[in-house]
Amino acid sequence: MGLFQFFMIIIMILSVLLVLIVLSQNPKGGGLSSTFGGGGGSQMFGVQRTNKFLDNTTWGLFIAIVVLIIGAGVTHENPNAIKTVKPNVTAPANNLPAQPAANGASQNQLPAQPAK
Image (cartoon, rainbow, N blue to C red; front, side, top):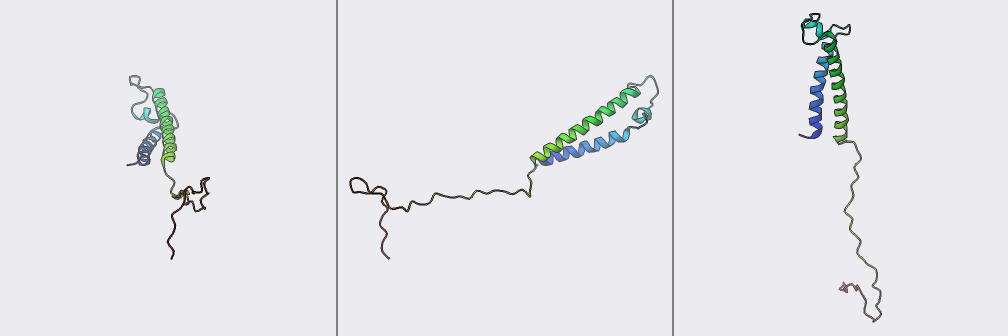
């Protein structure tokens, strides 16, 4: 499994959690805190603390999803991208006539080709 698929799985899990957190909030202030006995003074979290926790969790999940989406975009290879392929080009053979040396013998002299 590649890094892109890993990012996508984590993004899907966090998205489901974000939906559940958002649905548990009540825009009028009741939300999850009133569902589980809000208004009682002996609860562990008060209404304000529960709403603040849900609000912070919502923002945290949102930021995590955005960061993971950017990371997935960076690691994903674009199938439509123009790929530049460098051909294997070798240096051409030196077909220039050899320059005569000072003593009359030529350097880099090519072997004589048989007549056809």
